Length: 141
Image 1 (cartoon, helix red, strand yellow):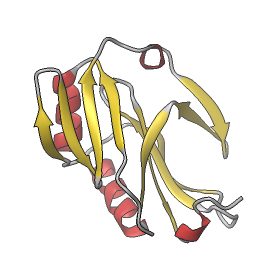
Image 2 (tube, one colour):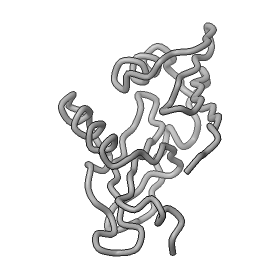
Image 3 (tube, one colour):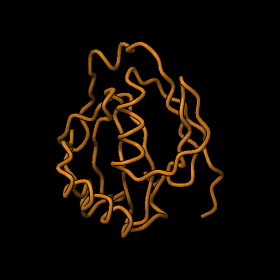
Image 4 (cartoon, rainbow, N blue to C red):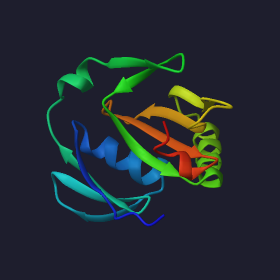
């Protein structure tokens, strides 16, 4: 599957902490930057963190129930290969990452079976990383 890279700009109220999180914790390559924003290579996509006062979703979390878990809304992330997802889950776990939803297999034995995990960046932006055993089921229903 060939996918064009997306561009996502998100608000962060602590640029230094967010820069460390995405650069050191995830090991993302940094691109252009200024005193108010930083570009990152987010698994082949362009993620830009912009300094901004706290947003309502960063101050007060909202969740929706999915597969017995409270999924934070809004959230963003990427679909990785199964092996890359397992490696990232192991790396984050070894670093002592506090997960909102620990790495697990969702919809086990059903259409859309996937590995998933949720965590928050230092500015309370929710991220989800997932992988499908069968990537052909990404949009299955």
